[in-house]
Structures are given as C-alpha cells and as structure tokens.
Length: 571
Image (cartoon, rainbow, N blue to C red):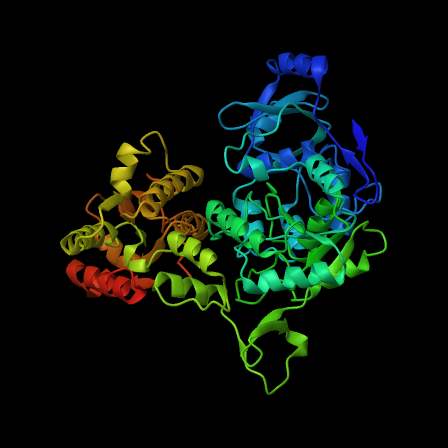
C-alpha cells in the first residue's frame, strides 16, 4: 500500500503493514512458515522497512539492489540509496528454504512481526561489502567487525508483509512513525522542518548549532536521535533520552519537537549521512543538518580516521539536485572565552581563546567527579550524566585475563580475588575458564564456534556483574581478538574493563602442563589446541602484560592492584 501525503513533506511513503482480513489470513498462514529469529539489528531494520522510514524499499534487498547499492549508492532502478539492508541468516537456515517460499520473521521470544517471500538467496562477498560501504576491510571499524563476526553467511532478499510493529515499552510517547511525524508537521502548520540526528547526549554546542541551522533556513526543528543499535560504548539510551528531554526545553516554545528513531546505525560516515538524509525525507523533513565527521568517529587499526572530516558534507553535495531534501552543512561551534559565547570556528581570530572539552575529557571529569563547566553543558544534563557515570571508584569493573593454557591465569586470578576481598567495598566474582565450562557451558565442545560462544557467555555474565557495581574476574584462554573485543564492548557500557595478558611463553606453559594436554596435542590426540594447531592472537592493546615465569602470583596480583589504583577503580 502506498500513502500519498501532501507535499512538500516527503513523497510517496511505503507502508508494508497488512490490515483487516488480509492480516488475519497471513497470521494463520505464518504458523506453517519456517521461522527466522531476528537479531537486534534486523529487528530495527524490519520496523523501519514496515513503517516506511526506508521507503522506497519494500523488503530486504535482493542481490541486484544490494550490488547496485554497494557499487553506486543507488538501487537497481536508479533511485538513490546508500546502505545495504539485508537479511543475513545462517547456512543451516538458508539450506532449509527455497526461492518463492514464505518465512516468518520473529523476535527472540517468538513474537511474529512480519513475513517475507524469499526471492533471492546468495553468499555475499563480505570483504568487498566492507570496502564499498565502510571504505576498508578493517575490523577495527564496528560495522566491519559486525559484518565478519556477527552477521550470517547467507543473504536472503524479498518482499516483506508487516504484521505488527516491534514492542517498545520505553518512551512510547516519543516513538513516532513517518506517517505520525508527517501528521504532526501538518497539524502544527510547519512548512519547513530541519532534522538533526544524534546518538549521544547534546550539550551547549549542539544546542547552538541546531538553533543557528533552524534560523538559517527559517525552519522548525526536529531533534531525531537514534535509539536502536548505536556506536559501541555509547551511553545507554535511557540516559540519552532524558538528556534530550531536558535540552528540547531550551528551544523557544512551539518551534521544535523531539522524536525517537529505532535505527541500527552502521557508523559508515559519508554513506551513512546520505542514508540519514533519505530517512528524514521520509519523515517529512525538508532539510537535514550534516555535521563534520557525520557518523564517522571511528579509527582504523593504525589509529587514523576512517573518513575525512568533510567527506559526508561533500558526498551529499554531489547528490543535492536529486535528494529531495535540502542539506544544511553545520560548522563546528566553539566557545570563545573573550566573547563568552559559541561561534563558528571559521569566525575565530588568532587573538581569541577557544575552549573545548572532548568526549574522553568529559568522561574523565565525570568519572573523577571533577567540575564540568556550564559553558560546556547545562546543569540538568550534567546531573543525568553523573548518574550514568559515577566516579570510577564507585563503578563496577571487569578484569579479563587472557593467555595460553598453563600461563598462570587462574592462579593469578585467585590471588587477585583475595586481595580485592581484603580491600572490600564491592562484591567480587571469579569466572574461571574451567569452572564456567562446568556450570555455564557444559554442553559446548572446543570448536572455534563453541569457544567463542563460551567467551561471549562469560562476557555477558561479567557485564551484568559490572553494571550492577560488582567486580568480575574472568580467566579464560580467549585466544581470538575479535571475541575479546566483543566482550570489551559488552562490559564497557556498564563500567570498567581491564584486559590482562598473561604472556608466559609456550615453552614455560608446556613445562608446567600437569594434565599433559600439550603432549596430547602434539601427538595429535587433541585437535584445535590453542598454541599448537590453533592460533593464539596476542592482544594489541591490553591494559597490562604479565609474564608469570619471572614473578610469583602474589606479585602479579599486586601489579594488577596498582594498575586498578592508577586507573581510579581503587581509591
């Protein structure tokens, strides 16, 4: 069904939801369909497909659209579209379906949200996709990491039928579909609407930037933050939304609105900025603010930016004649001490003093209970952030040991547990590799897939302990960097993460081997043994490295205590 709403607020809006008898009939048929359990990202994509935010898409992309988007940022019919929207599935599920077959799309609890006719099945070249969409096949980028380590190997494409919108229990009064936002715009009599995308709390500079942009184009303002999957390490969405609710009150009455977007961001820089603009056009906006380094604040493995700061603005300028929404390039706003106000960086003279606080510096000030000046952020927003970022000595944290079998991880971990219990102040839980295997992962084998799953389970438990103010001590082998990175991301959102590499040599580990595992591995009796016929990937940026061949467990534990004290987790 296509709904035509009055111009200039968007064009045709695709609405995939079934209605009336057709809906009930599809629900009945879906009981017989093969069911695919959607990932969180797929749930976000499905919701925006069904409600028209991804217009003109009518389902997950087929191969011809996918390849055209990767190659040229256009669909096969020539329409502008910059982001692949694909249904990635496992090999096993792909083998169970055929072309023209209908499948049921469900959440992890089994709730039915949509159905899809499988019109295409293919195995994607993920390295080529990474280079096309993200600019490099570098797993330091969270989008590339997700592509290689979280998404399925096979892509399905086809038309979607919407059954119902995914359930949201949070901020329902702020969750508006494109049709609802368009209706709100019409009801308020707004003719020009400029949208601002955000995935982080807004401070004084953001307020000044958006206020100036709205004035510049004589438009009303829609603050439209993403509350689906955002950048790893982003502050939780509940804190962010409370901050947005505070800042919207700082704009003149009747000029601005706040609405939440359940978008799974990819952090794809220029391509993502183009995607964001197309989505806001579908919500009825006439203008879209594009900031420097839009959706691109990620660094390569060498520590260099993935995207040039002005790349997003330059790309959208190339498409300006056919986008259907006007782009407002935003200048960086800086606080000028002598003027006591924010000004565009291009207007600053050499004689003036510019003050700024980076994201990392803000986090440090919050964690160390230092002052955050009012020129940087509003008091009510700082109060919300202090609730989310208590001082480090009051946060939970995880100490994550990694190293070869026999390196001394468990011994040092046990010594560290005792020392932390002596200090008191937080509950301490030891998640030792062998103990976890017994109580949490007893059904798992030792394939790479199962070893990864075991580590992810440890990470999940550690993240729950950490976010509730406790201390988790983890001591698995954890041989793979990508899995350790995933655990770091899981834990870091709720507290501290300290990786300790027990870098004892394999020769020393073999000499200590009381179970004879290394000898069995070298004899071929054990397959896939880390360090023998399966690699151990040495950490590239562990907070601490210890070789237990030249220090005792008590000394090693004391070194970790000193590191925790230095990082502010122990006071």
